[in-house]
Image (tube, rainbow, N blue to C red; front, side, top):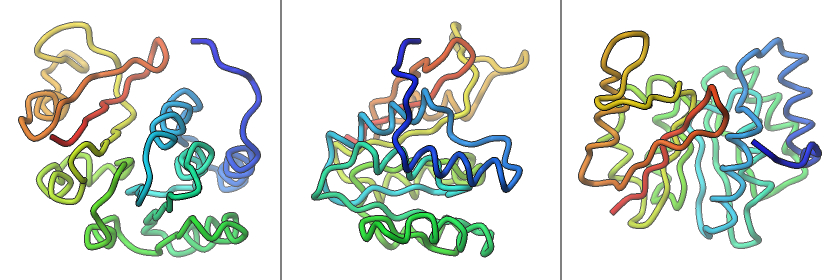
Length: 188
C-alpha cells in the first residue's frame, strides 16, 4: 500500500502518547488514512467509540473540515484526561471520560468509528439508530477474508457476516494492508 511517510502532527503526537502509555494496538496508519479521507467528505458530528490514546480521533481531525466536530469516549479516566490534554488546543475535538454508550445520545453522527470491542460485538442496532442516512460506520481490526461466509481462525466470523448482511447498511470489507481490513458501512 502506498502512502506518504509523513504523518499529520496531531497523529504523531497521539502515537507518541500511545508509546509512552505502553499501548501496543493503536489505529494503524493505513486505517487512519482511510478515516481522514472519509472525514473529509462529511460535515457535522463525527464520533469515535473507544478513544485509546487518541490516534483514531487525530486521524479523523486530520481530514475533517471546518464544519465538523469530533467527540470521542474513553472509559479509562486517566487515559481520557491525557488525551483531552493532547487535544486541548483544538476546540473541535471533545474527549468524554465515559463508556462508549455515553456518546449514543449525542447523535446523529455523519461518521462513527467503532473502536471499542464491546460496541463492535453488541451495538449494531444502537449504531444503526445514531448514524444519519448516508453516514459512515468504520470498524477496524479485521483479518482479510477471501471466502464466503467470512472466516477467521477456521470459523465463520459471525460479526463480520452480520454487518455485511444487515439491510440497514451497505457494507464492504476494505483491505487497508495485506494483513488488515476494515468494514466500511454506509447507513441507508
